[in-house]
Image: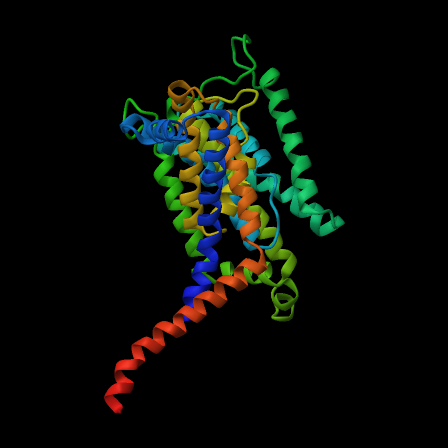
Amino acid sequence: MGTTIATRLTILLPPFLALVSAFAAVTFGLWLTGANALQVFSALLEGAGGDQYRLAETLVKACPLLYTGLAVACSLHAGVWNIGAEGQLLLGALATAWIGRYVTGLSPVLGLPLACGVALLAGSLWAGCAALLKNKRGVNEVISTIMLNFIAAGLVSYCVHGPLMEAGAQYPQTDLLPESARLPRLLPPTRLHLGVPLALLSAVGLWFFLFRTKGGFKIRATGANAIAARFAGIHVQRQLTLGLVFSGALAGLAGGIEVCGVTQRVYEKFSPGYGYTAIAVALVGQRSPFGVVLAALFFGALEAGSVTMQRVAGVSSVLVSVIQAIVVFFLAAYSTETVRQFVRRKINLMSMFITAIGLLPRAFHLL
């Protein structure tokens, strides 16, 4: 019992301590600058969930972070670092904008799945390039996925200035998606769309796959110890490839959902860095699909509340990026093996103490 509690706390405690420490550090920084920390955080909270519209905006901001966070978490379970969620998201968005030209006459029942399916395929193929380089040439996936991000950004720039540029040729952007490829709004006039509940279902699906299926066990076994997995008869290279491909599929789907549900087109600087923030989301969520959901909501709330914070409290919205960076910094500090061992020792001692107290009445009764 004590071991189970210690294990759970070693998972939950680092992100909790990181959040508390980050807000304490930011509070101290605001005090040094003369800003009212209570007013800043109140404005941030109000902007993230002060009413129905703002709460919906938080969910919309969290949606791409949830998909890409799940993508990074999936690859981490396989023991590979997918730093390329940004590029995979861009390729998914670009593929959706391209297929939008050909689904004008289709029913939404066909057009929408086709648009999302193409995004998913584009992201998985882009991640597959990194898997191929790793398996055939031994190229580290961190390097290859980062470089593929820049290639994807360049490809988007070329397409919106050239073959996929809008018919009017006035701005570097694609044409609007036809109605048949757009996700329906769930709470008009807010921007909340069907992609948000689909993202939550994706988190449940990923959890089920990783922790309740044979294929998910093989991926996790490979990530935990590739040598032991190989001796157990698991094809390690195949699992590494699957981990990256599944990860790329989720990131590509993030781009497709963002186009179908929010922007309805692709343009230069389409992503503000969702794929990079996803790394922090996956780490704060401790690679757990449900933890990633909470982390994505937290980061989405920061993004949604930043505008109100700047307007009401007079503090730059850049503070949100500072909070995100400090959270990751403290998370790294609290995720060391020394901290884990300290927590296990304290929890085990506490558990034994509680057990001893519980046995005292029985001991007195026997006497």
